[in-house]
Length: 267
Image (cartoon, rainbow, N blue to C red; front, side):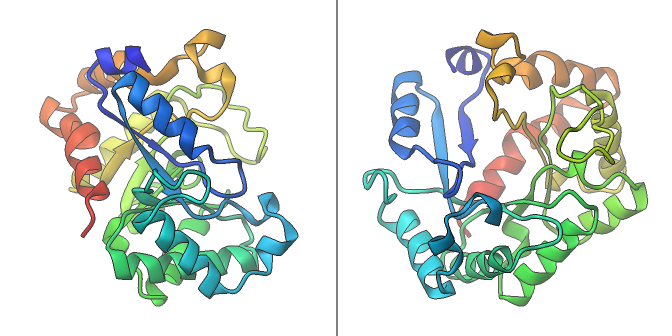
């Protein structure tokens, strides 16, 4: 984390939610020790990660919990208030519980004006379905970041169609260069170069204000201690490659500073 800060990193969005063992106190301790802002998320991951009693909770209870964790403090660390909802885990096909959580997220977001992050199912139709349900429940799509688009939508026309919906398009698997994707063998995981090509497509379509970047570091082998790129891969390798491929410094600054700032600001 200190290396991340030394390269200019100021904030990390920590998207661990209920179902995959969020550790709010640990997040706070890391932030205080490193001097890096860490923004914690509230919400629920995919149905497969939840206990049976959680799956049966009514939408009112879900709304109450997420609202309280933003306004008052986390249930596992009451001195830590969450700064976003997400990532909200969605499967393909969408589970009834996940649909309920999307609707609860929309209700909270419309009331508080907070940012939202969605984890789509591994199918190109999933991001569209999530946005439709979210909007129908009253959510503001302009405050949504759709994660993992680099493993979800591969067709150029479909990517542009999704960007036109108005949410943030997040390319967050930078550093994962292995084409084999164990979670869905039908998908060939793209390289960083291919991710940049997709980003260029959106820039050409005037969507540069709706692009976010990240590493989605969620396993030990991605950390430098275990041989991975760590939290500075985008600074060290991706930004220079973007420059080499013709993306201007002002546009790259939008990806790294301006767009995250706009997304994370409560509306």
